[in-house]
Image (cartoon, rainbow, N blue to C red; front, side, top):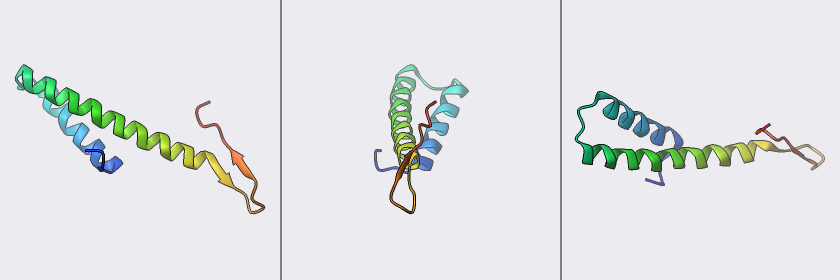
Length: 72
């Protein structure tokens, strides 16, 4: 599951949410799907954090690093 792209993880997460919102999932299956959803949320969050960190550091032509704090 960790090797999925952000988009693939998000698609699978949406599938799980749709399945759970439908309400026709037995409890054990719902718990299993919820656990998978939480893993996918972590994967998406990690990928977004990594992308944010990459974007936050832009190197100017002279080599100076500009650190943009995107969390503020």
